[in-house]
Length: 313
Ligand code: SF4
Ligand code: MG
Image (tube, rainbow, N blue to C red; front, side, top):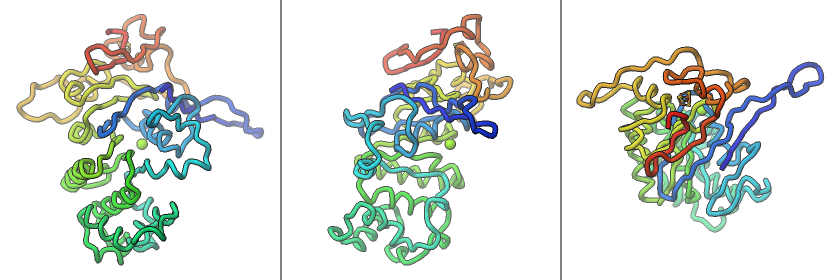
């Protein structure tokens, strides 16, 4: 609720704060239990920063993060470890999150050790069970990350994320680095695991096709704000925000669907250090009118479950 992350811009010999990069500038949304919420937007729109704040890897500048009724934005660092069992993150590049010197067994067992569960758990048995769950072989536990393909390494990251039975997984561009055929295998695995483990996902991606495939609901971000939030079906069928319309018009479309005219946006995304006045999209919006430079639209529900932040509505 009202999440913000401002990074200070420091300058000069005294490293004085001369401004702020408003990476996330007042974002509110709900993620229901058992749901996959997709978050789309171009790079720099604040989607990863939002995910990192929810994971408490980054502290929010302002706002609440309510998890089962408790504001975890206020949880002290010392208490975070307990919370971390319920939250896991999967990243784009499993290479950077898997220590190359460690065997797969130790990588997957690490969460048990960190959380002091080693003595209570049959670790080797758990590792074998997790490897099977993600479609790898038990004997793989004696190998090192570099002996696996990108898709297999992402399976290892998923096994590691599942080790402590989390409730929420934040996946940040989890399949973006993989070949298209491998992407669908990993997505299908994630869908299957969600059912099996009763997981909720926040699925962050710049790839609309991927988000459409996996999400129950989708949020569209632009320049640190949420511009539209709806069920995947409603959003892809009837986008309301001019930015969403432009994004969808640029995506490849299945042959039989009604052909949308491609909307080409002029100019670049403005710098989050100097966001425009009024509607953050007004400098590029094909439908902008006089009020747009003056008034910042709030996210409003237009039809049941479909919210949009645009002065046209
Ligand atoms: Fe475009 Fe105005 Fe709507 Fe912003 S508020 S998206 S500028 S029409
Ligand atoms: Mg990112």
